[in-house]
Amino acid sequence: MNKLHDPSPILQTAFSFWSSKVLLTAVEFGLFTRLGERQLTAAELGTELGLHPRGTFDFFDSLVAMKFLEREGDGPEAKYFNTAAGLLYLDQKSPRYVGGIMEMLNARLFKFWHDLPEALRTGKPQNEVKHGQKGIFEELYEELPKLEQFMGAMTGLSRINFEAFAEKFDFQPFQTLCDVGGATGLLSIEVAKRHPHIKCTSFDLPPVETIARKHIAAAGMADRVGTAAGDFFKDPLPKADLITMGMILHDWNLDQKKHLIRSAYEALPPGGALVVIEALIDDARRENLFGLLMSLNMLIEFGEAFDFSGADFQQWCSDAGFKRFEVIHLAGASSAAVAYK
Image (cartoon, rainbow, N blue to C red):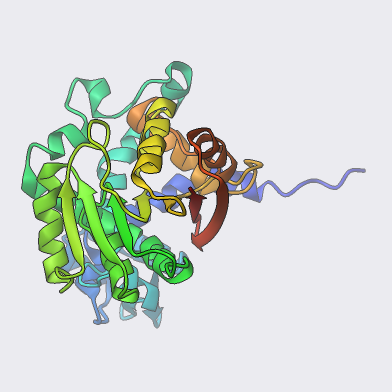
């Protein structure tokens, strides 16, 4: 008789949206930030968060079971407190806070992913545009404070990858760097901090330049990191030995991706390099689940946009004239794909 397979992995994935919603709700409530370094009972924490007593134990103990909270003792007098990872990544006061992206997941993407079947059948975005509203970026660029808040929310996730890139890549042969779609200037700041010989420029749309300058000045890097403004689909890219694009290329369709790669090639000197930082899908498309799911997210957000593998990147860059390639794993699901001119 055949041994029965364990259905647990199937069921675990099927029910995983329960766990996801508990964590996202905790971030939305500011639970980890409110706790900070303190230890509180369920009643105390529930009162601070404005929760009804019916759900508090189930909610907090689910977070304990998921290892996102710690608890000392049992019963009503037990004290809840943050894990070391919670303090580092989920407390808003930490420079490594990644809750910003989770707030966006909860407020926007959780409901849009409900329409994945329609996205797969139609190839059309399932975000605000579908409901007759402005797209997220169109709306953000009309209101500078909202745009800055959004970019701040993205920095936690980006910082992990940009720090890894600044530490793992060999910057010795290069003197200048231009970060295309540089947002707050974070990639340039992280590289400049570690490599004093590199002069960095953060390039983005004109409304973003003001935000970048503020963040660069706050980091004390204004003498090492400059800014430039333009539209990377209409304007030539600033000349540099090294051109970087952090989580930029996956936002666009194939023709737009190829345009950006050609623009980078034209802005680089011989021996220069283009680096794209993404959740690169593995070449066999079997292992990097996050990269594959991110590509489905691009479908939901933008329709034609998609994530890609290192082999895809190499092919597009070869067509543009690049000669040598490598992939450097950074952190988690993310890697840097490098093309040398």
